[in-house]
Amino acid sequence: MSLLAYGDTGWGDELFFATLMTIAVALVALLIGFILAAIFSTLKLSKNKILNLIGSFYTTIFRGVPELLVIYLFFFGGSGAVMYVAKIFGYDGYIEVNAFLTGAIAIGIISGAYSTEVFRGAIQSINRGQFEASEVLGFKKKIYYYKIIIPQMLRLALPNISNVWQITLKDTSLISVTGLVEIMRQSYIAAGSTRDPLFFYSFAAILYLFLTFLSMQLFNRLEKNYSKGY
Amino acid sequence: MDLMIESFPKLINATKLTIQLTLLSLFFGIFVGIFFAILRTSKNKIFYFISYYYSYIFRGTPLLVQIFLIYFGLAQVEWIRESFLWIFLKEPYSCAILAFTLNTGAYSSEIFRAAFETINKGVVEAAKSLGLNKVNIFFKVKLPIAIKQSLPAYGNEMILMLKGTSLASTVTLLDLTGVAKHIISTTFRPIEVFIVAGSIYLLMTFIIHNFIKFLEKKYDYN
Image (tube, rainbow over all chains, first blue to last red; front, top):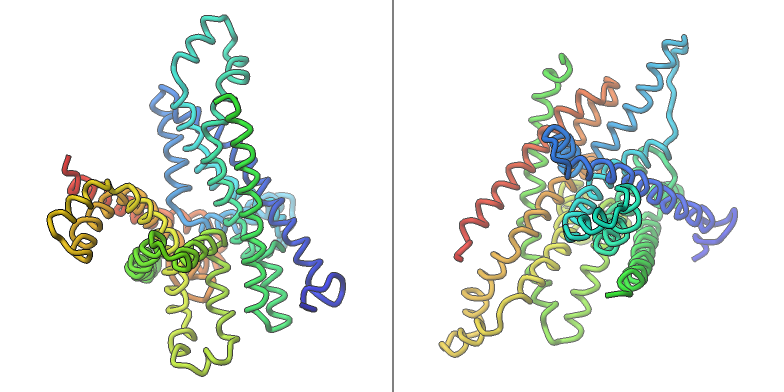
């Protein structure tokens, strides 16, 4: 247990901050995913065939290619792009881009592909009458989407959003390969310097279980709250 | 473009390992999944809890943790190192397969459990009254219905497992992702390599997708 002491003697504080880092990356990634999903689900639902194709292209690729490969693309590609720009300005060395940002963007794009399908399904399952009634009542499109369609959509999408969140949370462990100090990376460091991988990886597993358990409770409560009227 | 042509044979070669890992893990995973799905429907509380927590733990933690625990963690336990199991557990290949099998087993057990639960009681009762014994009811009546029911969800799980095998590269195996990473980190041209390796993965998902569709049609008696 002394391995987990808080402070200089143990790994308690490091693992605590690593857990916060995991939560932070997952939240930012989920948010990026939602923004992308809002865009691409609209594309997928549009009547324009080309826009449809762009939407399908996005979801097919990022749900069909391993997460790790996408992370490598952004990790190496990100610094490559920055170095390319730096070269124009005369700097020739190696630049490493922020691991948090690349990780969150990579996971966010993957998470967005799953969210797109969730959003699309939720919008499609809303009764057409709701759209027509809003129009008849003279609401502007922007207003009735925000006030009428999206609130109903959220209730329907919530169980699936919960799934996407669990996937996103677990995917963040893959960012450890880029050196970002989240739960997995910190456990790797701790396991290396104490030569006790069994303990630290088990503890990492417990931390993830705790996070998934906690988010399940939260989503259950949200679901109850959103289905009050039903 | 040169790099794409140059890296293509290397990546295709590495795809063999990816396919091998996927098929072996799925094969073993089906048995693990059916086994735990049966435990889950059992009336014995201990069996139920074992199955429940097995699936809870393996579905609630990242696959990466599971691989690292098995590959790095188990090597630390002395009695494992001295037992015959060590022959398997010292190899990253068998560790990866063990981790993937347990992981896909957990997800499949949930899929199969749901499939068993949807079986109409009348069908089982009809089989009983026709004088079939328990073993026959399970293999000839319940299992075929359950397999048909679980096909769409299991197809998704197959694709998830295919993508999951990319984690084998974290324990030094040179699968498709492992080789792609190696080429990227030596040439620093991620986009070309991503396009080639990504297309190979997409082709495999496409094949799985259509294979499941074919099976669904074949077993659609309605």
